[in-house]
Image 1 (cartoon, each protein chain N blue to C red):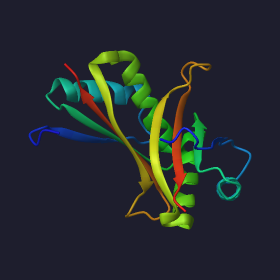
Image 2: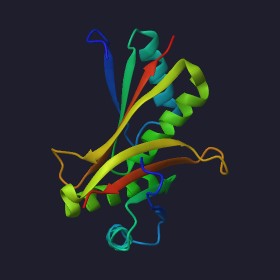
Image 3: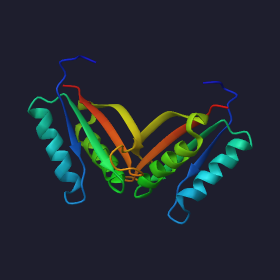
Image 4: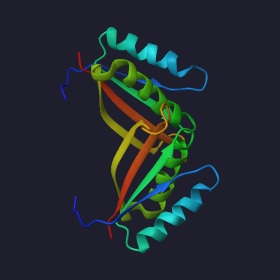
Length: 90
Length: 90
């Protein structure tokens, strides 16, 4: 991974729709963020995966799934998280 | 990966608790399955991650997270899935 890569983290919440997040991520990528980390906590883990799948169906080969991490949030014990890293291809 | 590795897939549903799945998986591993794939579909993706975290907190170094896949289920279009592969260490 290049050290100069610009990345941004998007935390998925209940209040916004999947499409809202997809639009946010596409906008961030157009603003020059090569790498976007989609984070979902607890019940929002499923939604974070929905955001990734919706983004993938729109961007197709324009993005690549780089990494998927799962675990327990350090600050909030017993809260599961997912962290999905996508990179822009062109 | 050894070709002789025995694996089993556990599909997480709404009806059973996280603890039930953890017990199922420990039982399967004791029966000789070295590799367990935890699958969650749609809303059950969050629960699949909860199962992994609960299993990890109980087994600690006894298991290792081998792989996390996310995507769209081929049979049910627009349904997101997660597939978490854990291997038994000893």
